[in-house]
Image (cartoon, rainbow, N blue to C red; front, side):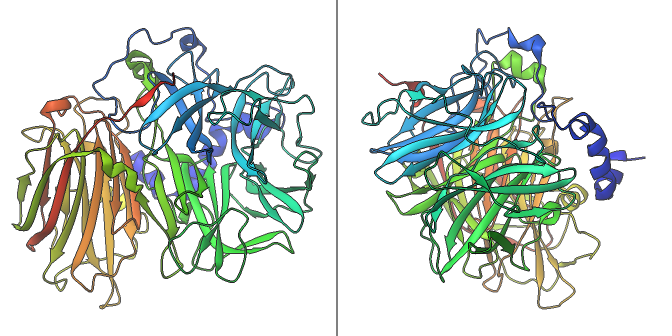
Amino acid sequence: MDVSRFLRKSPALVFYLLLVIVAFDFGDENCAVEARHKVYPEYQSLPAVSVKYAHRTGYHFQPPKHWINDPNGPMHYKGWYHLFYQYNPKGAVWGNIVWAHSVSKDLVNWRALPPAIYPTKPFDINGCWSGSATVLPGNRPIILYTGIDTKNHQVQNYAVPANASDPYLREWTKPDNNPIVDPGPGVNASAFRDPTTAWFEDGHWKILVGSRRKHRGMAYLYRSRDFIHWTKAKHPLHSAPKTGMWECPDFFPVSKNNANGLDTSALGQGVKHVLKVSLDLTRYEYYTIGTYHPDKDRYMPDNTSADGWSGLRYDYGNCYASKTFFDPVKNRRLLWGWANESDAVQSDVQKGWAGIQTIPRKIWLDSYGKQLLQWPVEELETLRGQNVHMSSVKLNNGEHVEIKGITAAQADVDVVFSFSSLDGAEQFDSSWLNAQDLCGLKGSGVPGNVGPFGLLTLASEHLEEFTPVFFRIFKADDQNKHKVLMCSDARSSSLKSGIYKPSFAGFVDVDLSDGKISLRSLIDHSVVESFGAGGKTCITSRVYPTLALLGNARLFTFNNGTQTITIETLDAWSMNRPVMNQALE
């Protein structure tokens, strides 16, 4: 019996099995160690002496070595972008977590600074976990973060710059009046973390803190007039049953009228709000679009946004614990996510590093108001080098065409595919509710009519290894409608056994009336970050090839559908290496 397939088709059973797996957490309201914060003491004293570079990324954000996870509190201050992130300075597994700190002028080249926050005081002696940054009036930055105190309770603390005139914000102080928010009666002290960026409304600053009550996920709302004394609202801003712990909540406004970003405190007729949560049970993120009612301290998702496992996602692959911020320099909202490692713990220790951040993405509301769009920041294009251009190339059934002349292991490829007709598209089965299951059923090698077609990334010369990123188009029950599946399928990515090689996928809500669909993939040694249909569906895959490494990697376009596909235009670039976390002099 294929147990994994059975479980995927039985989400309710999966939910309860997961509850059993993390029962130690749900059973003890004062236990501060949860499922994703697993400690590996046998590896904590094994710092990386040498770092293996075969799978190390060239232009994605990562430190020189060791473990990283959640991006924390990105902001712009005195001419510099600041990125804080969870970091283990002693090894390549989770543990010994501090707030590492890097700065950049352009979101591409980064310089490392000393850690901003690390455990030193009773209110955070057992850990400095995730949080956010807010820039108060008068250009005064402040950090809110979760500390693990002497009782192993999760409490919310603040830190301020030791010298606000320093544009690098090299040193931070943690005042002794911390914590400023503690769980209080009726709140689970082991599931109370990740304070959001604050917004200002009606004389009060407001923040959310992620939590759960038994199996119900929730975002508690707190308000303060002075940012020091906080009062809990009578009810959560929002909650949902059977979703478990809500980690790393993010709550922000988006414009209904254009792609510009909005300050986190923006309200008004032309504004919708987004609530994103990271579900500890599934290790995926979900978001809703809805209406914020500040007078009632309530957020109501639109009827086009579902809470929980069936909801919208920023990214349908290896992406978790994301954080957005408003960039006042270019009037945009930017998103970072943690492209979490899928390799084994022992392998992480051996190679000396684990985890990267996604490329920062601009994020905005689509013209229909039903979902968010994402696109790599324009600054990334400054790294483009050697270019290969193709146009009007026919891909017949079973053909694959190599894209030569670039460094295929470190590339940016942007392609528009077209098709002459959708009349022969396969019929979509209404039982295919889960895109990832469907990708597993109908992979890149399974013939179809309109698709599968797309890219074979990080491919070996004879295709023993490859990570396909592709589309397959189906005919829906309504004869004038079509269902578009986008896959990034890691099952064929590596000959190495014992590693996680999932078939990630999402459906793409796109108008095909012009007979075209676009795909952009950022390929970087062990990560393939893809954007379908102009950023409607995004998938990040972590992969670990054994043959398709460095100069031996290849890049192909392909079509395994009976209908001929045309490459309308294709541009591919070798990507140069930026300055990546060298120490700031």
